[in-house]
Image (cartoon, rainbow, N blue to C red; front, side):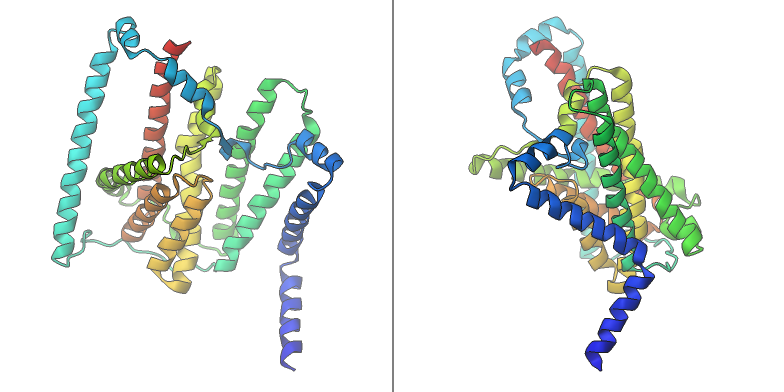
Length: 367
């Protein structure tokens, strides 16, 4: 009786969620076909020709050999002689960095003193609404997202041949990413507003107290900067000891080499505005609340931070990104608003992008 009961439960579940089961089956079968087809040279050549081995090339890995060679060619004395304004700019940047880092250390010391006295860092904890969705709904959104990625990429492979113009081939991955991010945001809104009939305030999108929360976010990120610096220095030291050169993400290479202004503007908007907004709506607004309802805030913060770091596809940056994810979850939990985590995410991406544009500026002198 018991095994039959379990089988009937599975049958009812599959019947109920047949759309998601279809999409999941498609994803699994497609990946199984790719793995199997790699054993045959003809199929492998077909896959390589149609670029089906990678769903989101814009977030993949690429070697940093080009940038390393470029930096080796730079003569900093020559750079300073050609650009008289650079020393002033570097001095201002240095003073700003020292000031912000010192402020971050001061805030960290204050936070430690508060914690030693066993007091809360935030006096007023934000109110969270109890959400109606469950953990399975997180997987539903993930299945939709991945399924849509496969469909878009298959259409791209059908429309663009390997002999297509370079502009089209470099533009489509980021366009795909933008379409997928907007689609994910639309499905999150659909799930919250239509399926579960809750307001967007359930995921933390509420205007009340937004200015105060954004201010707290900026201070929180400044306090996080010394921790981030320590983690990065530790990873650099370990990489040097192990003689490990981390691969560079393709998105870095894009910002260092891309010459089209409009494409750089679009890419910047993707990295600084759309990406952080959608990721926070999913990880902190949607996924965090469902996991918290089942296993509590600490487990939810840890799980969402680990998955958040893992999906960024970089082993070298896993620990710093995970630490950032924990900060984002903490700010969301304490304020009850999504605006602090969105603000911190945007700030972080903007600073990283700023360093890339600074490197791009100096790279002009190596050519």
